[in-house]
Length: 319
View 1 (tube, helix red, strand yellow):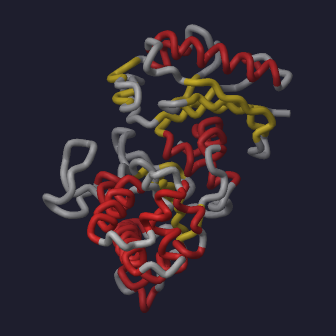
View 2: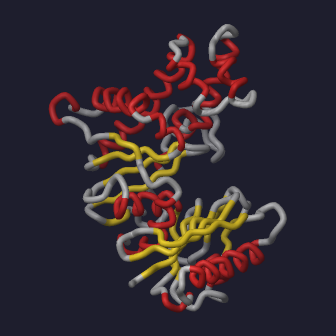
View 3: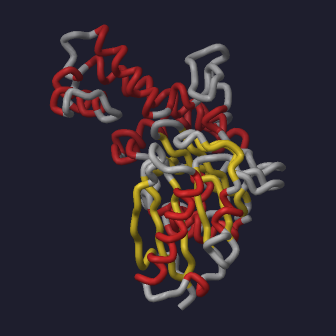
């Protein structure tokens, strides 16, 4: 059996999976990143040791793998191999590949985590069988991955397709990237939470307050959706406007790329048809000549965190 090893490097945890030739994860484990207490070199060493342990637990030696793939929430400079910026750990221009090669004696590929996720979904998930795929992961920020004609598109310098940071509203809401008006500032779950809190302050009688209490006195990405399902008018407005934002951005990307399919990842995708039905309707209305030529379907990604592991392991196949 031909196997590969994929690593999903996150700010909280490092997920490691052994993936077979049918893109199935046959063994998986996770370790804490410990970014607050450990140095870059310590984290990399722990990741390498965990990768070796995962290989052995699955019945392999690390040398059995043709390569090891890593997905990381950062730009990867293709000229230097440096991980440009990892916000969760404040790493800047760190030699992740070179440091890992001290412990791992096979080639190491490093890619953006959203790019790895769309590769995973294209190989084994909701986008299987499609050659042109756009994926948006709606979470704390917005991750995006793009496959064009069966190949992962990363731009001329390998750092493209950051769709969450396209300007959506000139001079609009502040974004974590330091700019204003990014799509992420309106369509991420963080933006939805902010929009929900604003609505709750304006509507003290809204059911969103009770829902928030049931959610541990927290406002989450589910708060407005849960209250909207109960018929709460303020929550319905929040959800409708939020879906407007998401659809408007998607329609712009569709006008540029015309993918076969658009995938929505992240926890918000679990809202199912309550999100996807109006999202498809609004996207169709916003897309150029949608009434004549239609729009690609917007569907939920299905692999969750496994997409990043599978895509990391096989990312070189789509480069």
